[in-house]
Image 1 (cartoon, helix red, strand yellow):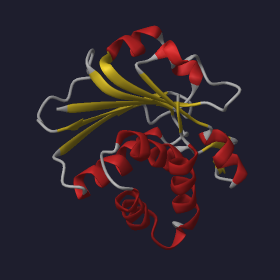
Image 2: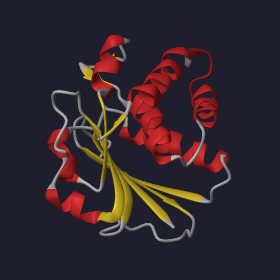
Image 3: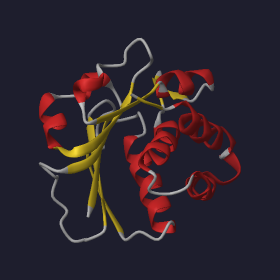
Length: 180
């Protein structure tokens, strides 16, 4: 079983990222299960989304041997989160090149300036950049769990005629992620 945990703040698109990745992994033939945990009452509250690929049934938040963490803001990153990673675990962090942490932070570290991509394309709601599709595109590239066209199909279905910007952000996230 593989476990992916997403951490974000309400409004950034962490739940949407989880939903899109779940759909893409399912389309790629993986047995998947998603468990979002958030408070719908307030924007800015912590959002956690756990994706399990393989053996299904357990819906608890993993505490160790997590295969990947996706962190939507550097301020959310805690030492306890990094300790959850498996020995070959991946940390995908929304961080620009100037804000990228040291390579020794996680076994495998990938960074994407998802906020910069969202701002460039004016994908903002209530002054909060929406990072969902850029982060999903980046994760698809660094994880190898499905192909980019599979994710793009899931985005197209989710957003329909209004999907053009989100498709563009997913492609830019896929191309712009840096594995340190």
